Structures are given as C-alpha cells and as structure tokens.
Length: 153
Image 1 (cartoon, one colour):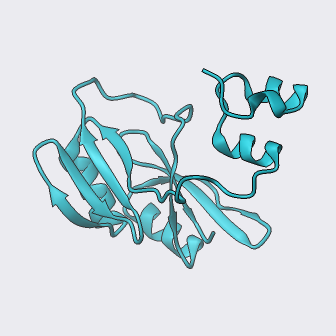
Image 2 (cartoon, helix red, strand yellow):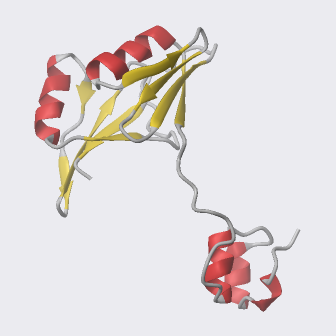
C-alpha cells in the first residue's frame, strides 16, 4: 500500500519513509499543515509481569501509584495523568535486568536525589543519578528486572 501523495515526495524522503510511512513524515514532507486525525493521548502503558501481587506492591507502595482497578489478571494504576497497567503473564522470570527492553517507565519527581535515597532505603536497586541540562534523572530496577526511571523532566 502506498500513502497518498507518496509520489510527490523527494527520493530521499521516499527512501527514508519506505512504502508505509508515518503520517507525520508524509504531512511534513508534502507541505500539508495539519494532521487529518485528532491528536492522540497515551491512554496507558502496559507492563507484562510474572508476579502481579509483588509488582503491584512495588508500584503502589514504593512508588505511590494508586490502584484504579484490579482483577486476577491485571492491575491498573494511576500515574498522575496516565495509567500504568500491570498485566500478568505466565512465563519464567528474567534473572537479569531487562536493559534491552524497548520500554522504560519514567516517573516525575521534584527531588530525584531524595526519592532515590528513599527507594535505596527500601532495598530497591538504583543507579547513580545524572543530569542533562536542567533535568535530573536516575534509573532503578523493579522486582522483575524492568528498568524504570525517576526524573525531574
């Protein structure tokens, strides 16, 4: 399938975009000023977990996310403007941190250093904090090896 106006794009854009290109690339390259769909909002991020009760305790008790909904198969947590859903899976747990995962949940904190210290005191594995411009951030590891981040951004 070819997107509308695909032939009007420069060869370099067609090569970068391929036959199926994101609408934003096509709109920008073709000079169209607006997208034809309403802007999307992230509804929720789903994290597949092996031990639902343990992960619920971590994200609700230690990170302070309130439980919105809970069933035998999933827990939905209020992440302050978004939702994190913990969804049970039935696979063996990973023995090492999932650094190669394509997902990292990042949570806002006014004081990353203080939150890091509090999490370390609770036994959470935390990495050293870093700054980039005005933002401070720090990665941690949840009970199943997923990397998460606390950030001032």
